[in-house]
Length: 209
Image 1 (cartoon, rainbow, N blue to C red):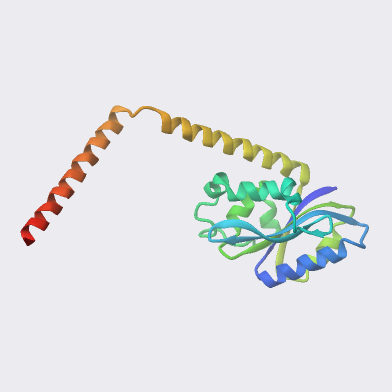
Image 2: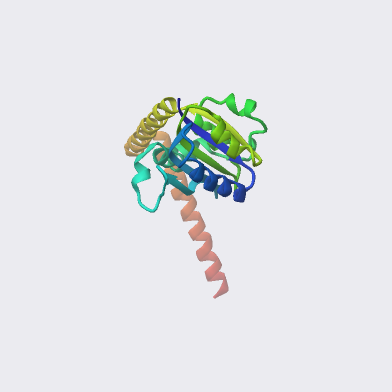
């Protein structure tokens, strides 16, 4: 079965070690094939890719960015990801167990809600004849692993891109709209406020002469 696998780690060094082991194991274990693997981190409230490989090669070029994980990272780092991740990690922390994590059907929502500042996760696109090879690596560490159907996540990411484009177009349209009467009144209030502030400022300067 083709899956998107995500393992949430509490220790960054363990995630890097798991990434290295996955790269090595994928070259000789015929029970699973890794297509794309990335190590993600919540840095300053934004999900970024720290490391990864594509079909067994280090991602020193940009080819991986056209794949599912690259598109996912683009959504997470874009306006929609920031919107979904508002207050990221402030309420919901790392998943305590796999059962809790599996309740979330949306990978995008899961990542933005579960990854606190500084948290890391490995995301992999894989074809698995057995879940054992991947689990054997992840279970060595303090990590929670959840699987999603790759086709479901591909559709979710593409839908998210459509939603993002629609939000951007709507925002542009609303910004182009003529000011309503209420908005004009607000502008007049601000105009009066600025004038008062400058008048007060000029009085202060004149009083010091």
